[in-house]
Image (cartoon, rainbow, N blue to C red; front, side, top):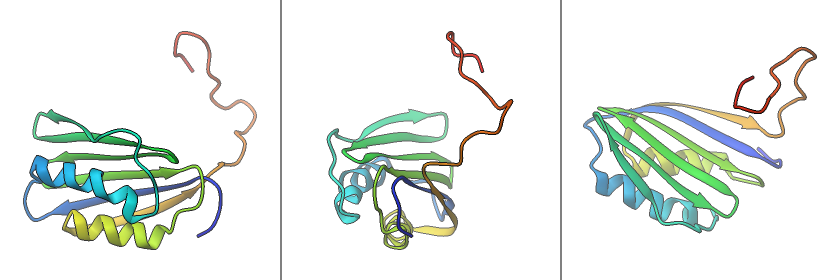
Amino acid sequence: MLGNGLHLVIDGETAAPLAVGRVERFLRHFPAYIGMRRFTPPMICQNDDGWSALVGIVESHCSVHTRGTLIWVDVFSCGYMNTEKATRGVVGLLRLTQYRAEVLQRPLPAPVSGGAVYTPGGRF
């Protein structure tokens, strides 16, 4: 899929909960695997039963959230991304046993009249 602004969203499962080292290695090496450049080190925080992790890339970001054996991965690029290669990389590097991948093309269509509007104070 070609275009400006591709957002790859993967929901999956692993055979066993991921160790922090696997999450860190994934975020350290995955951007180069898909031809992108990191500008931050992986940032990882332990949550109740898994990890929340993020790496900034020049093109945008990659994030991983886990809960037990469940995993959610987001890869956003403001430019081109080979989403098939990126999906193969996520599945292989994180050893997903099951997954569903979706790709959103950005920019999304303009909101319909009467849709959510941002107002100061964080309310819509």
